[in-house]
Image 1 (cartoon, rainbow, N blue to C red):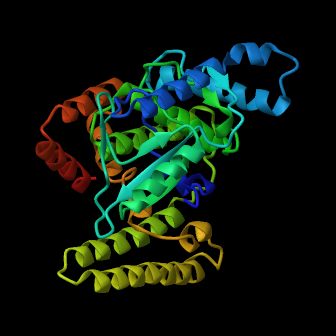
Image 2: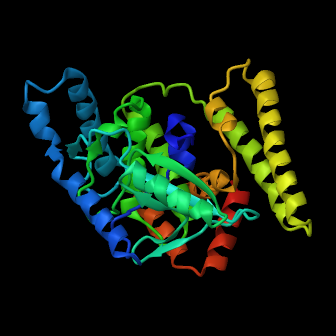
Length: 353
C-alpha cells in the first residue's frame, strides 16, 4: 500500500475485512495479541444513540453517526441484512487503522502464504493490532526469502460473533464509502463461505453496489459520479502484469535471470501506468503513491478478489426476481456446492450477464 488505505482502491483490493480474533493460532503470543486487541476494541465501544443524545458530541461526528443509523436501518428493512447491534456502536481507537495485515509470497510465485483458521477458513494474510508487530512479522518473512506487503485496515467484520462498531478509522471516508462499508460488512454477516475469499468479497461487493443504488433511489438522490472506470483500468493494468509474471515464474529460467526479468516487469508496469495516466486521465494519477513505492508479488495479491464474481451475483439477483431473501438463499445454495461445481456455476452466470 505504502499502505493500502492511502488510496480508495485499498479498501476494495488490499483490505480483506475478515474476523481476525476467531483464528486458532500456533503460537500463544499471537493468540494473546489477537485476544487483547479485540478486547480493547470491545471495551472502547459506546452506543451511538447515547452519543447522539449528548450535546457535547462534536457536530461533525454526530452528523456522520446519524447518517450511519439511517443506513443501518435501511440495510435491515430494505436489503434484508441482519438486524442486530452491529454498527449501532462507536469506538474511537485513537489510531488510523484497526489492524495491519501482512501478506507474503515466495520470491518466484504469486501464490500466497495461507493461514487457516477454524471460522474464517484459509486467508492470504495475518493480522496484527499493532503496526510494530506487523513490521516485525514481515521482516522475519523477508529473512526467509519471501516477498511481503503490509496493508492498514480501517474496518473488519467478526461475522456477527460480536457487535461490530463503527470506528474512528472509518470517518475519513466519504459519506458514500462510509455507507457502502456498512452494507458490505453486514453482507459478510448474512453469508460467509470459509476459505473462498473471491466468492465472499464478490458477494459482499455486489450487495454493497446494489444496496447503494437502492439507498439513493429511496432517498430520491442522484448517485455521486463514480470513478469505477478509472479504477477498473488500473486494476486491469495490474492484472495483466500479474499474468505476465505467472508465465515468467512457470518458465525454466535460472534464478538470477528470473529475478532480473521480475524487476523488468515491475518497471514495465510503472511505464504502462504512466502512459495510461497521461493518455486517459489527463495526467492526474490517483494511484501514483502505490505504483511508485516498492513493488513485489505480495503487493499484487488482493487484485481481482473483490470484483471477480460481481457480474455473476448481479445475474443471480435478476434471476431471483430482485428479491433479497430469495437471492440470499440462492447464494447459500451455491456455497454448498463443491468448489469446482461452484466455479462452473459462477462462470455460467457471469457469461450470461
